[in-house]
Length: 211
Image (cartoon, rainbow, N blue to C red; front, side, top):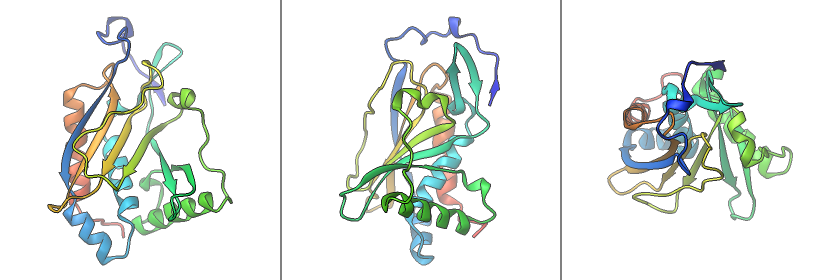
């Protein structure tokens, strides 16, 4: 990460009780959905990769306030909850970015193996306290595959929290999926959210080239 010039004292949202807000919008996922079924790949894993890529393309989403200074991470990894098939085990995992791997297939299998090792107890998973997560180069991703929701609200640990929270739901009959993102208004305005959804749609539309 690197420190950047940003006057927090002149930011209109810095003294709000909470600067957190959420936006939800639908994106088309038909091409990626079909590709996953054709290649026997996890749509959850591929969705995670698409949304991670979209987040990392927006600089404002990678900013944090640490010791009253503003820093911008070079990239964000993902933390996401995972469950076993019987929904009896609930844990979290931290996932590296797809760019760290030679092929998309290699990254996909790494995520699957990581999830398996955490659920079977070989790996303790991600356990950093909620209050300390702004110190990490992460964004939180959460899939809610049982519900085709229109909008969602997110829990707020503290009004000063900066870390983005991204949630996505069940695919509807038109092969569209709602993606919700919670951010801090200190750094993220409507234009930045517009870029996020534009990039997310691009990621789900373009088929993998490093398979």
